[in-house]
Length: 476
Image 1 (tube, one colour):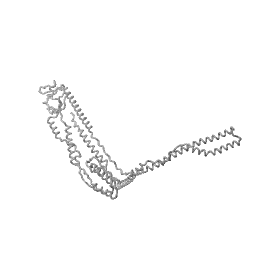
Image 2 (tube, one colour):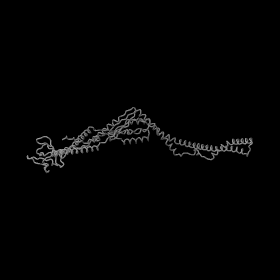
Image 3 (cartoon, helix red, strand yellow):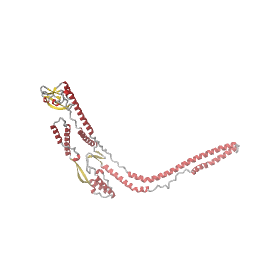
Image 4 (spheres, one colour):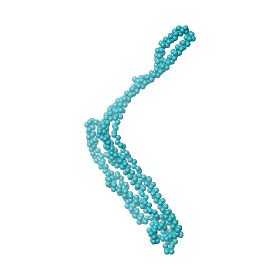
């Protein structure tokens, strides 16, 4: 027979351990990916496990700040710089002990689950197993929160008070509260939540505050211009001085046409007199065919000039119309620009000079892979199914070998002649199959007990010695 297969692992427990390992790996990766950064411009530090944001303290500071804006240059109040803060504590030793107890209990419970009793166990073995199982404590996985605590303290922000006093002495407005000053002063910290702080070097901090003051001053100027803009927007746009809209009237066309005709009339009259004298000198008199032909040529020239003058008058009228319309639009555009100039200046002041801070590395979070519980359940089911299939296959092989022996003959199988009897399987008919050896031979054997199959007709024959023999061909 083959060796005993190793016990199947506890897949669910391993999945839980994998999930815990994923969390630990994400914590380590997060810390390695987010180092403290120190540069000539300032520093960025990352800490973990600080207490929560003190919303109430921040709201109170904002209230005091708003009130101080209503009464500028008020002397700083020391009470505004008294702070409550907490110190985080963690019982590492107690947590380690609880975690060790939990792991031991889980391992022992997993061992017992892998070695559950079956039908081959005796009553005393079942009792011992149940006693061991009952003796295990149902220990839950320890929570780090159980071993975490905070100590409340009261302190005085001397540095903040000194800065406020300096601003007061310089006649500067108070600074708005910084949310970063209220991180770590509340309660309920979580070791997996990072706190990222950025601090500027003294030189860059001075430049930053200078830009704040400049922007504040520009803002005050802009605020003073709001009344001017409000008055301007409340005054309708004055169209009374705008040039009249361009018009394409007949009078303009007539003026352009008549001016051309008047200018050309002396030339036409001289041309007509010269032609008359020329014809007379040539003996061509009025009324003759030659005279009339010469006059028709002269009139065609005058008609061509007349048509050209009309076309030119139309072009002049269009050009004048465009010039008048452009002059009107230019005037409206200029007045609109002058009207919007205060608003544009206000927007420029309001936008101010944008403050540019040094750029530090952004915080890089980590994803935690979920524990493969579903995969573990499937693996555990498949392992159990594989064990069942292996057992069924082994049982089939045993039966095949057993009945092969039966086909060869009838053998002694009296329980009184056997020792080291261990049940290992069952026949298809429900009869137990055992491994054993005869009293005179230590060679392992496999078969049934003759006393247990006597109910099968023809299966048991009594030997002349009084011991029982089994005809395996009859055993079902």
